[in-house]
Length: 122
Image 1 (tube, rainbow, N blue to C red):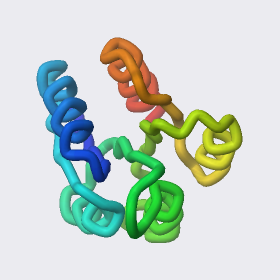
Image 2: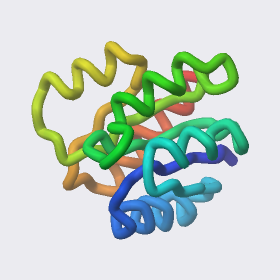
Image 3: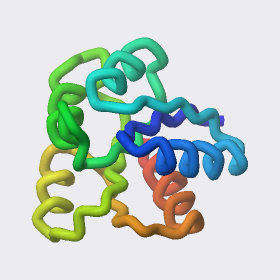
């Protein structure tokens, strides 16, 4: 089964998404911010990253930019999971290379469907 890295500054969100993914059979890793998420992506080469946009330090956009600039991580699939409801955020995310954009609050069925679709694109 695929390995998924969750990058979110909210411990509640990280743990909730991690549990849902593990219950669905995925290996789920977590990182509390963009910088540690980039390090974990380099160390574990996940199949997919699910990342919040609004985080202290590196935003989700900055995290995605850095991952796409690095040959070691540039091909990792990427999904934004965020409370930012602005349509422009979704457009910018896709322009930077994110495959999906899921708004919070979300249903687990929608999350798992997006994960399955994104991993199927690989």
